[in-house]
Length: 118
Length: 337
Length: 147
Image (cartoon, rainbow over all chains, first blue to last red; front, side, top):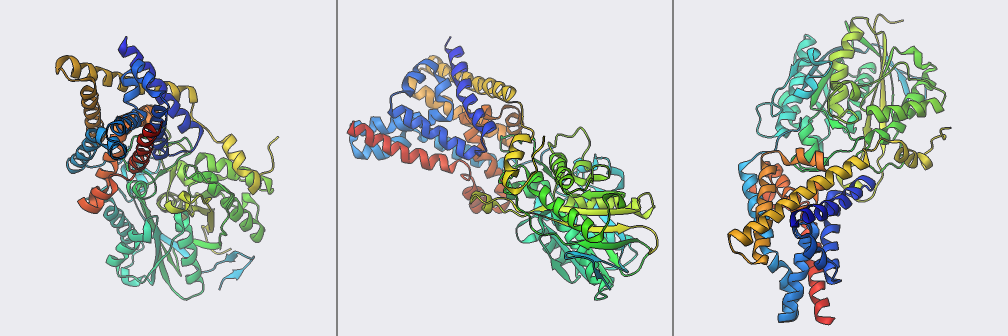
């Protein structure tokens, strides 16, 4: 059942993004910023954790889940280390993802070439 | 000597389009004019390391080919008038570096080909020059990486979007034939009807096309039917519909003899949304096909109206609208009337 | 009756009359592909916890890293843009889309060199995500201290 919930929650979160793409002329970059921001804000408000408990990867895989990690990391570290935690907590918790993106991005650039579209 | 017949229209005498050189990419080669192009590239890198270098090589090829087909040498050409879509028009400039012809680089976005032809015509008509080559180029990949998104980015395209053509075309104009007479031109004015959507260039340019066509017909006192074909550059399907509508509002019906290079360049089943675009588009469609039709007398009178959208990647980010422009050049086959 | 088009009403006319893609179909495809990618993530989470005996946090990190790897690989192979044409938001919103937005410009601008091409352009699209995400995370941390 976990898989069904992940599918439904993840699909719904992406569908919201599709509405933004189809109905507004927001560019992908702006939509991604909105998603990560929404993830942070909803986590602070205590609304994203229940969604993650229910939907599992359906909530953590979309980019709002990245915001969720950033917020959780900062909030947990702040409670343990005060202001220093508030500053370092977010990026610390998401370091694996960011490093992977930089590393694999660079490798792919080295190994592959872009192709003209048909 | 040209006669000014209106605020923006000039009648030209003693100007002939004698030959054209064209080279296109694979997808354009599969379109209806495939057999007419001088060369179709299977690999759009054209043996070069970057697409920018490839585009420049295409530009050079088209110019060399046109001069060769005209039975001339580069030393016979008084002037190369050319442009493209890239920043600082590097495709044209770097090609001109290899050609050793006095060079006038111009920028008219996708209207560059008719702008270049118009300028060449005026220079020859005024007897300042005997021979000019008018050339433009575009390349899908160089345009995408400059104006839009990296090629591998996973975002879709809207239905009104157009595909920048991989195409380079050059036309030789001379003060004597044999060739098709260049009989007149109308200069475009910038027309901006407040479109901001860079994915809908057709709609942004349509008011400019309508404005120039209307001005041309009024100032020459001709009806649309005078021309066998009114050929716009790259309004695409949707832009063409709007332009026809705008002209109808002014009392001109061009629906029966209108054609658009952007619509015609690709095969009918190609996945190109609203059609092709780019200054190379009208250069190769005119140069490879319509010029030949005029030379063979299958068409007698054609009005070429390349249209351009004069935006930059920065202007749209700053919330600016998209200004359009269109230049018209009239061609007629047969002897002077 | 069609209105007489003028600069003032032109934009509204174009917005109304220009073809738009079918929203229901677009939503269905985005939902389906996005859901699938998330389900894959769920599977990776389970794999991490049950097979590799990782904690929930660690398993989550593993699946994110794997998904980023897959997004980067598919972009490099020239497949992700095909997926994007089909799925729209379904390929942009998941973390695989974030990877694609980094790999695509990195590959594209290789011809301008590895420092100013790949290095600088890599974050052309993903950069804003990191900027705003970081700033908001600090705000979140401060909020946790105050409330």
